[in-house]
Picture 1 (cartoon, one colour):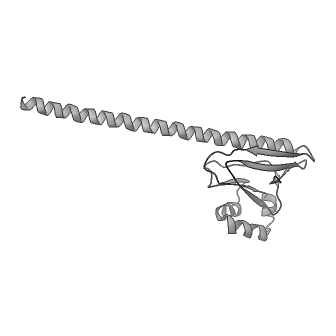
Picture 2 (cartoon, rainbow, N blue to C red):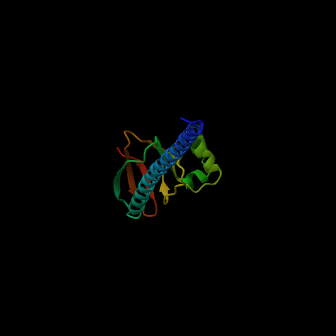
Picture 3 (cartoon, rainbow, N blue to C red):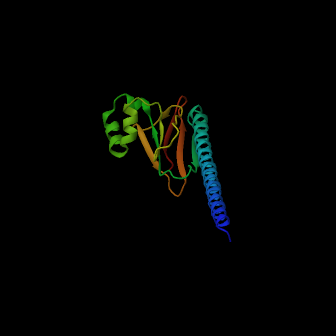
Length: 164
C-alpha cells in the first residue's frame, strides 16, 4: 500500500467518525425534545382538566364532587392557595406557609396571582378561578401518582379540601 492511500483511508475514517457522531447527537436531541414535549402536554392536560372541574363545581352552589387525577410525573405535592385570605395579611397562615414552602411564600409576598403550585416547582405558571381554602393554603401529597380532592361549590368560588 502506498503512503498516500494510508493517509486517504485515515482521512475517510475520521470523516466517517465525525458524521456518525453528528447523526448520533442530532438523534439524541430530537428524542429528548419529543420527550419534553410529551411531558409538557401531560402537564397542560392535567391543568386544564383541574381548571375546568373547579370552574364547573364552583358555580353549582352546594355541590360536592370528588376529583381524581394523575398529575404529570415528577411532582410530589400539589398546593392550592386562597390568595384573598393570604393577602388579608393573615400572618399566621403566611408563617405556616413559609415554614413548609418558603419559595411559595416568597411568591405570595411578591404579589403573584398564581394559586396552584407544584413541588418541585412547575415551569408553567398556573392560576385557577377563585378558591376557598381553610387556613389560606393546603398541600396534598401525590400518593402513588394519584391525587384525590374534595371540591365543593360555593356559588362564586370552589372550596378545595382532602377527600375523606
